[in-house]
Image (cartoon, rainbow, N blue to C red):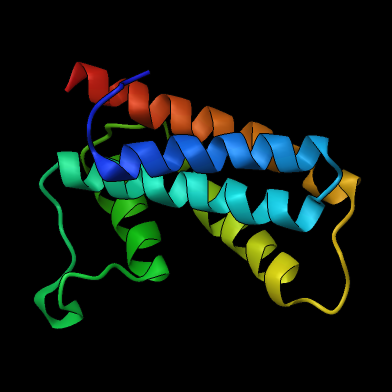
Length: 133
């Protein structure tokens, strides 16, 4: 995996470690949150490497929807940099994070078991691709 000085790469790796440790500790809402952010931060790193930035009207800030759309639309669909099965990972993990952070009940191990694994695969593929760029 790439060990670049990019801040979003470091954040993605830290969030991934958090997702895995939170799941192992039985803190499933936190695991879902960190799994999403690991992928979000890896996607930001990938977009930055590809020379894609936020729109000017956003004053240099990415929205969650924009990251999901740009990553899937430009890097998967158009440029075919990443496998198509990564297309829905961000949106699926975002929905789970929303439930974990704002829902009226706690998530359980069955609901979140795939999240850290999906995040590990997403982050690994995206950051390994950076080694080849």
